Length: 104
Image (tube, rainbow, N blue to C red):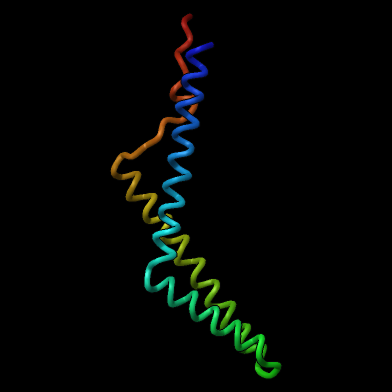
């Protein structure tokens, strides 16, 4: 039973490491010039929307396009980083791989 508790603790630590790495990647992306420019453009357009009643449809289309562009950028970069990390063999144990082998 103690071995299982140790394995569960190791698995939890690995899960926390993955969450931490994802947070680091997201924070890094949020500070990249391309991402900052997109977010600034979104804010600018949003202010225009709030200050006008004419041309709202066109501004909303721009706003939606920029939001989609930013989301795609983030997802692509996270995927690229995950592949790089996997290639560097920075693997985390899975729960089942770390369970003690049954004695038959």
